[in-house]
Image 1 (cartoon, helix red, strand yellow):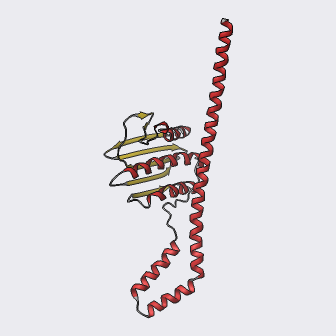
Image 2: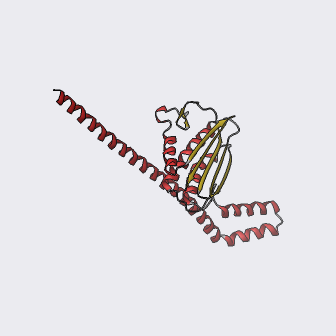
Amino acid sequence: EVILAVSLIVTVNITNYFLYNSTLSIMRENNRRAIIEQQNEYYVKQFDMIRENINNVERLKHDMKNHIFMLKSLYDNKKKYEYEEYFEEILREVEGKEKIINSGNVIVDSILNYKLESLRADNVELSVNINIPAKMEVSDFDLTTILGNLLDNAIRAVKETEENKYLNIDIQYKSGRLIIWFVNSYKHIEKSKIGNYFISTKEDKNKHGIGQISIERTVDKYDGIIDVKYGDKKFETMIILYC
């Protein structure tokens, strides 16, 4: 009976072990697919923006003769104000939809342009400074994981701020190091911590910290560093990847 009981316990433990590994593998695969779907969504948004600007220029070229005729007519009739307004409208068509970010790195531009679009309608002081090469030794998957989660957290915090809303983003590549620095306003934050991260203020407490843990695991792949500071209604995150 003792041998049978021990055998059953061992069998149960082995079964639990394989079930745990199987469940973990499924969760990782689902997370990988979710990140890839996000990447595709960012790319589509970026290409739509580029296509829209190209279409605006093509349409303007097609109608340019008529526009020049109208400008000449306004000028000849000394309608200075109407002339200037019409000219400004042509310039707006040429410029097309403004891209917030245009660093030359497709994945970074796609993520930031997609995420920061939601701040256009808010009274947010936005500052973005990026100096990176078109291609780095960081996978697109890992960049999406880090930047996507950082942006989600920062944008949520900024939108919850009642006044003096701001978000400063600085991304630099120097001597084999990718330095990502986010500084943003926030309303409040709980002081309890999970590892290097503060507990989220999101209503769904069952999901808090998931994004932060994803960032931490990704940074560990590059033997990187995460530094989080907060105070005086300012939240600051710096990440350094060695690549």
